[in-house]
Length: 72
Image (cartoon, one colour):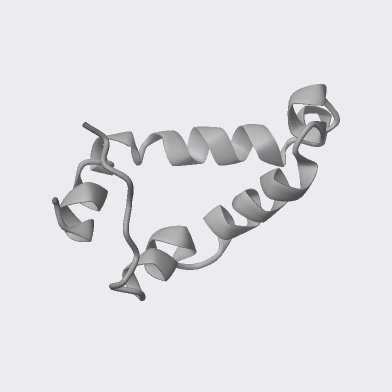
């Protein structure tokens, strides 16, 4: 099974999308839509996590006992 580091490294090409996604969801008009409202609690938490220094990747790397399902 690939290590956590190798899994995160595979995500690096997608890092440029971070600013676009955060910018989109930070707009009040986009948070007023049904796409946001349908899962408002989890959307708000994930947006806050993405904006926090270190964000979710830091939280994931802090715990080595995290296991991910196989993506095969």
